[in-house]
Length: 140
Image 1 (cartoon, helix red, strand yellow):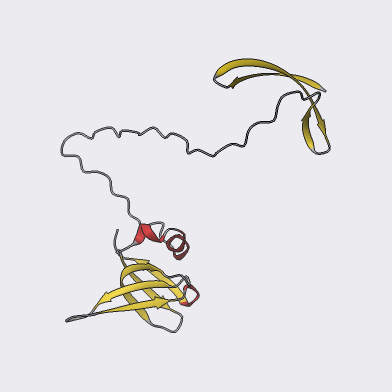
Image 2: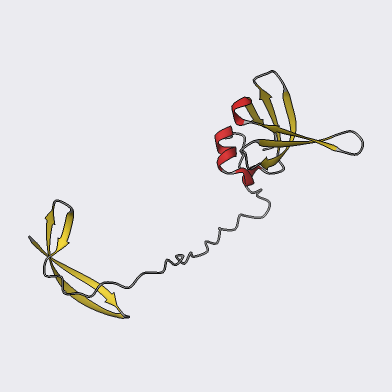
C-alpha cells in the first residue's frame, strides 16, 4: 500500500488528489476509489508546432538526401508514395530486367514500373516482390 499525491486538471481547474494505491496480481489499483469514471474520450490529434528551419547563408545549396543509400524493396513496399515517378531498375529471378519510372504498388502488392516506348505508348511491368532479386533506385 502506498499514498500517491497527484496534481491534475479537472474540468479546467487544477486540483491535488491523494490516492491510496496497491499493487496486485493484475497491476496497480486505487483503494477506496470514490472518483467518478472518466467520460469516454474522443481521440484528438495533438497540436504540432511548425519548426522553422534556420535560413542558410546566400549561395549555400540545400543538402540533398540521396534516397539510393538506404533504398530497398522492403522500404519501397512500406512507403511507395515516397518513390513515385523515380527511375528504377528491377532484376527478376528469371533473368529479366525492367527499367522505368516507379508507378506504384497495386492491390495485390505487385510493383509497377512504367517505361515509355519509342513513339506513342508505354509498357507497364507488374512484378511480384518474390520474383525481384535486385531492385535499384537510379534517381537520387
